[in-house]
Length: 215
Image 1 (cartoon, one colour):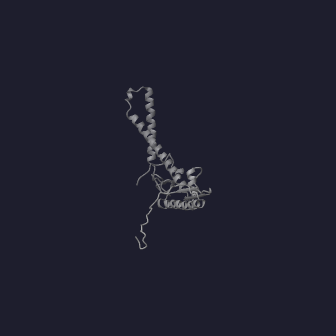
Image 2 (image 1 turned 180 degrees about the vertical axis):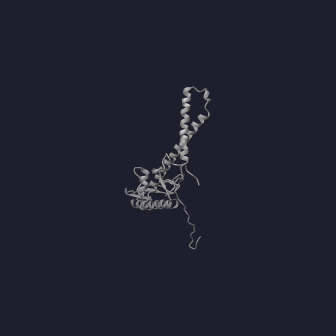
Image 3 (image 1 turned 60 degrees about the horizontal axis):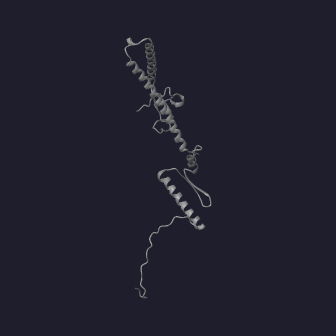
C-alpha cells in the first residue's frame, strides 16, 4: 500500500502474443506492410547470393498489381533459364556463364562418345582374336568354314597392321589452351610432339584422336 492508501500492484507483462496472419483491411497499413516485407525479402535474397554465390530470381506483384523483381546476376537471365524458351542473355559485363557451361558439357560428351567408340573397336578386335585362338582344329573344318576362318584371319591381320601403323605415329598429348571441361579433359585441341596445336575439327577426330595420356 502506498502513501495515498492505494495498493500498488505490478503491471503484468503480456509477453509475446500469437498474431493472427490474415489480410490487412486498412489500405494504408497494407501498402506500408507490403513495402517493408518486400524490402526484407529482397534483402534476404541478396544475402543468399553473396553468401552462397547462388543465382536467384524473385518476382512480386503488389496489391495494386505492380510488378517488383530481384535477380542475380539479373532477372532476365534467371527467367530465361527457368522458362528455357531461349538462350540466356549475356550479363552486363559480357559474360554468359550458363551458356559457356552448357558448351563445355557438350564438348565433354562429344569427346567421351569418341572414346567409347575407340573402346568398342578395341573390344571387337579382341573378340576376333579370341575367336581365332579358340577355333577348332583346321583339319576338322569343311570348305565353307575354312573360307570364313580365312576371311577372319585376313581382317585381323589388316586391323593389326593399321593398329601398328597408328602406334608408330608420334604421340599427341592434351594441351590446355583455355579451360578444362567438366570431366577434367582439355577441350580445345590436341598438341603434336613438335608443339603444333591440332584442333578437334582439324585432325583430332574420331579416326585419329589418341587415347588420353597421363604424365
